[in-house]
Length: 150
Image (cartoon, rainbow, N blue to C red; front, side, top):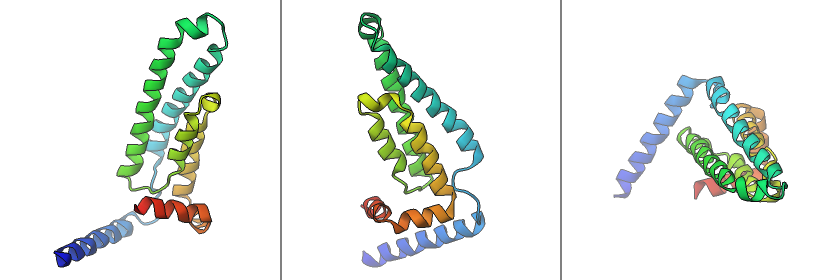
């Protein structure tokens, strides 16, 4: 049983090495993905910002816009799930987007475009090898690596 597991792990590492050789220095997140996901996240953050500002209006913001606010929240959760799933499929072990999305769910600061900012930081760290090495050298980066192995 252990021999099969070791052979499977060895085969997976060989496949990963072959994929790295084929990809070379190509960025993990390409321009196509950036140009699709960034405007989507900007739209979600913009709608949340409008909803947060509209809540200050006494009757309109609290009665009329409540169903719209709930709809925007549902859309933002679906988009967040989509992006997290995309990062999982691409095997990107960067939890920056997840942390940014968690902070974006805090009621008072949810009007800020934290989700888009976290996505852009994730793209920068993932595509820039020097930034990735620097991030992995920090205590927070080491904690993220440990957490991603769990």
